[in-house]
Image (cartoon, rainbow, N blue to C red):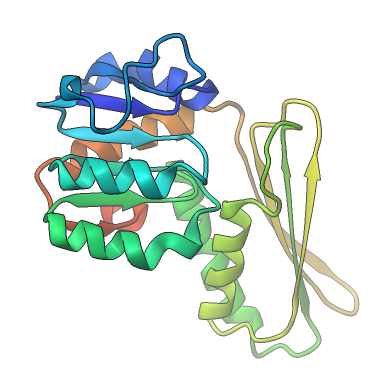
Amino acid sequence: MRILLVGHGKMGQLVGELAGQYDCEVAGVIDPVSPLHGGGPDADRWTGVEVAIDFSTAASVPTNAAVLARRGICLVVGTTGWSPHEVALRQVIADAGVGIVVAPNFSTGVVLFEAIVAQAAKLFAPQADFGAFLHEAHHAAKKDAPSGTALLLKHAMEHAGFSRPIDVSSARAGFIPGTHTVGFDGPAETITLTHAARDRTAFARGALAAARWIQGKQGWYTMHDVLGVG
């Protein structure tokens, strides 16, 4: 399967390094700041590409994704921070008849962690004495705070019925790949659930698995669909 890397920072490079393990051939790179930049999303050389994997910037996603979708290229988008444009992109995807997997985090562990957190929130929701908090830590270069994964977890807790305030905090330091901790605190006890990424390979592997899965499909999907998690 021929894939296109949109964004060639640390994540894009890692996806490229692991692509062969998923029977994927990298057709090229869209990233103006990379020496491997092969042109914009409308470049002729992307003809025949089946899936584009986007780990770029929030500002570039709406334009690049729309152009690629209209060319019949399915998408895997791990970039966060562009949600104000989601409605418009959903319409483009529907009109183009292609498939897209959108996820703030492609780690299999995080997807399962979200399901565990939602279940915990459901159990604690009727326990009025318990408050909830969510803390995430990432490397110093990560721009958005709180992380897209933190916002996803918070939404999962609220959707599960936890209606009381959830305190969300962030830390940016060093080279932390990503740590998310959800806690429930009562008058005399605390319960915490934590997911810690040891390196970025889990995210890259998840994105490549999603690319294999979305090939030939139509519609808007998440990693829940890819992994079959309800």
